[in-house]
Length: 338
Image (cartoon, rainbow, N blue to C red; front, side):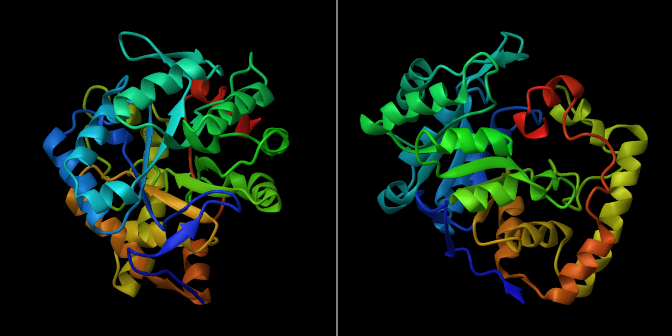
């Protein structure tokens, strides 16, 4: 039997990383890629997460072109001192953006990005720093080595990676200690289970799992007739298109039956499943509102026994999702998929 715990539960990010809350808050949607957001509600959600014992705040310097880091800084300034002291920032860098908001590639050089993030966050250090995607023109050894120099200088506490494959993970770990690998992992995104997750465990590297609700697709709240607003990434995501959407929501309907039998929500079941895959995995919850945050935190009180896990597996088997998790151009940037 696997039992998750209350919102004050903690997990370690690998053997060298920090101790963090069992659930982290992914803040991207408060600034980018899901349409308009409410600044006041976003800040209130960050405060509610901190009040509930969430310590890990995940962001990227390219989320809203700096907007997200400024938002987190504002939220932390308005939080009680004890919460500020407990909060840890996980920052991704390297994604290159256009004025119109498009993506043009990745830059694996480090120092300039870090300087700007420190200024926007209003802090003298970043707790976990990682390149968002591998830069094909800059060896991962060089990128990790540059972050290691920031660690030595006290500007960064721990080194992380994002969306890298097993071989790259090994190469990076040979240069400096790696705290965690941030990578998509959910009931319908299980590609890491073959080689990436075993390699991370062999090397003592933790996993921060994003997309645990697959951008809301398996949250139980997404409907077949939902209209997506301008700037919503899901309007281009293969899993939200046409027949793919219908087939994926059929999976959600099957998962709903399992959830209702336990008296919990679909989202709580999906999050609890990720939590149950190992104590070295920390799911990131992309809640933009306090009600969605409260629902997600409820997953920490969900107990999944062997029969529950079998029922979930039967409802949503590995590989059952229809459509890739990103459009083709973005899939090409994923070292984890090569």
